[in-house]
Structure formats: structure tokens, C-alpha cells
Length: 211
Image (tube, rainbow, N blue to C red; front, side, top):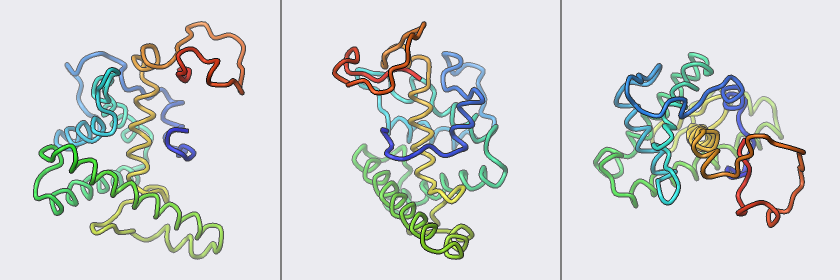
């Protein structure tokens, strides 16, 4: 509901397979399974920009970048892995071209501006893909085989824009983490009857329930 669209099959599969952001509570001894050190640091800055720490934990507090690394390493196919890596490199290159510096060195305003630009482009591409799929199968197949551009080569994975998957994994990793589930969302260790249609005014604190 937060993202406004259905989750991709790969993200659902990752969660069902037990991918977790905060399986342990420190960075000590952890090594990425797929991303290199530079890519990992970029993911940490991007995810924290999307979900910064306020009166609630930020993305880095629950190690969302580790969830993403596990997802890409264990769930993505080799082709999807390289597409995601290229999408991350494209975003970094666009930042360098636009602001003349790395994402980590940009101001909060510049980071937000860049991410919002890529999100808007992702929504536009997603709409184009849906329209092509609904109107002409051959057109959909053509788009699925092409690279789509947003100034730098715009990356898709599984006919989905790169930024959509990046934001999706950030939010899913955050909201399925143990700390957020217990301390931010409503948490019931022994859930009772499922009430699928409950007015939010009747929910404690107006917060959604943990997954």
C-alpha cells in the first residue's frame, strides 16, 4: 500500500525464503555476498535517504542494505543480478554528471532531487510497459528486450524499472525487520482472529500490524 503497486515476484520469494535485514544486530563480521564495498556503501546512503532515522529507526539501523544483498545474491538470477548492479552504477553516474560529485557527498536536497527524478522516470516507464502489454504483445516483447534510458542507460529487471525494485526492497526490508516489527508497528506475539477489514481508527496507535 505504501508503494502503490504490487510487489514483484522476486521480492515476495525473497521474503518467503527468509531474507532478513536485521538477523544480527551489528556489522561485525558481516560481509556482502554479492555487492562490493563501494556498492554496499552507496546502498547504505541511498536507503538511509529514503528512510532516514527520526523518532523511529532509519534504514541503516536495521541493516536494510544487508537484506538487499541477500535478496540479490540468493533470489535473483545471474542476469537480474548484473542488471541490478548496472542500474546502481547508472544512478551513481547520473549523480556524478548532474552534481559533479558522488551521491554520498551531495546535500540532502540534491539526493532527494535525484531519487525523485529516477522515481518519476520509473513510473513513466512502468506505465509504458503496462500499456504495451495491454495493447500489443509484440510491442511488449520489443520493450522487454531493449535498454530504456533516462539520460544514462535506465535499467530494468524483469521488465521493471531499476528504481522500482530499489525502493521496493528498501521498504520491504525495513518493514519486515524485527526491530521495526516490534517497536514501530503494532506487534502481537500471539495473534488471534484475523479481521481483514478493520477501520484504522480501531487499530492501536493508528499503526499497521507487523507482518
